[in-house]
Length: 113
Image (cartoon, rainbow, N blue to C red; front, side, top):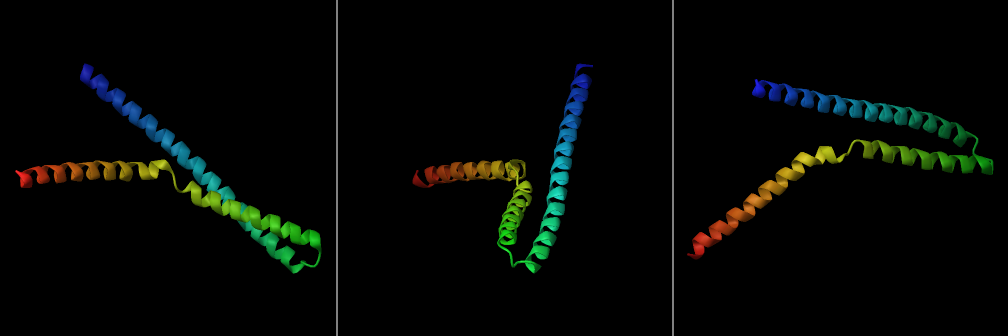
């Protein structure tokens, strides 16, 4: 019975982790969607202002809009890159690099003896 309870607890914990990951993914997706919509709005506003570019305050607005577009693009790019996406490949690289060093060391010992 204890083993069955442990299996149920493990399954429940795995489901909780999946739900949390899904919630985080939804939040990131919604943020990306909002940023893309905002970027579209800003690009349209920028185009409209470029057509009326004669006044100085419009140039200032254009500069502000361009800066905001760049910030949104940076947010969109950085939202796709997380530690979790690199976590597994990172640890595999560490593991195999360590294994390679140990194997090289052992081979060196064999060759030297």
